[in-house]
Amino acid sequence: MSSEKTKIFGQQLSEKVPSNQRAAFAKAIGVSTEAVRKWCKSASLPNSAQLIEIQRVLGVSIDWLLIGNQFSEQNPGIVLMDKADQYPIIKSIIPRINRGMREGMSEQALAETIQKLAELELVRLRDLLKSKEKEKEGEGGMV
Image (cartoon, rainbow, N blue to C red; front, top):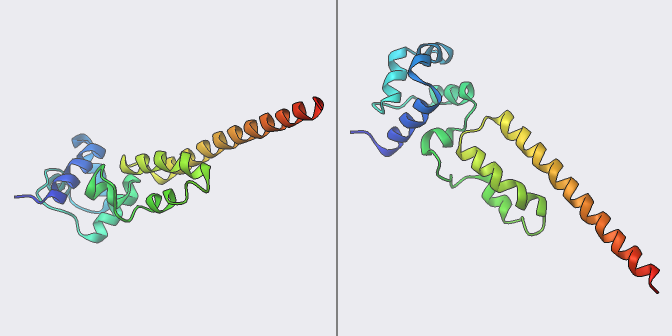
């Protein structure tokens, strides 16, 4: 009988590595195709070195591989959300990044998402500042 982590790992790996790509994937991480087949069927788990290599090749987090779409207790985004009231940009970006992490986005995709969201937030803040400056100018001219 498989443990919950073994089942989740098998589901996550199967999602990222379809059956027609398993031989190439096995070669890329240095294991047999049979090992990958067993992992995908939730019959076993890789060792820690293999898990790190899987994470690297697939570009996903180990948390995502082992716990799926659930939050990790060690998720740094949760700590950052504590500071969100002080830093509005964090409040807008972190929930989206957490979702990407849970969905197994690669580090590159996460970095690009952070950059795009930060740029959008900066445009919004600039517009807000311009609006406030226009309000101040309007108040000054009415005296």
